[in-house]
Length: 151
Image (tube, rainbow, N blue to C red; front, side, top):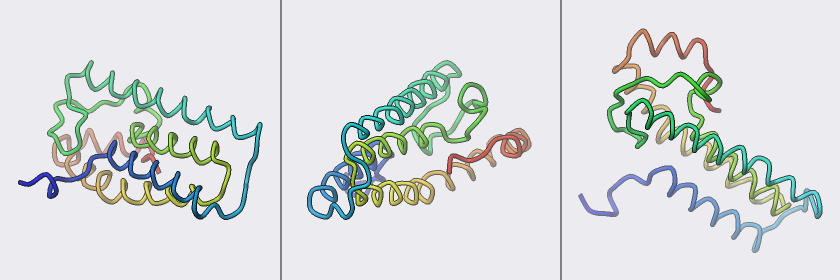
């Protein structure tokens, strides 16, 4: 398998979308939605996003299950942020993009947020759900009834 035929994983999608946000802000800013000093409010979703990601990864490590997408899970993690969201890592990545969009202050960076949500849902969430359903069966179904998807 060549490097170019490998799937792009969520952190790569995040970097590509961060670059898209910067480009859109620079060359197609559209309307200004928020200005200084209010743009500093963008720090809050970024902090929450990073916290969610690190907490979730720590739980995966604690339970001895891999965090890499499409790697067979050895445990169904349902504690911590997984009590409120089935996908807190993806939610955290999205909050980082929201943070940047607020900090930039223009409308166009929000297009990258929407794009990221659609790509992650299609390329990862739906496929991972099928794998978890096959691996954990009724336990996974019960968790799905209690906890919402990330978006």
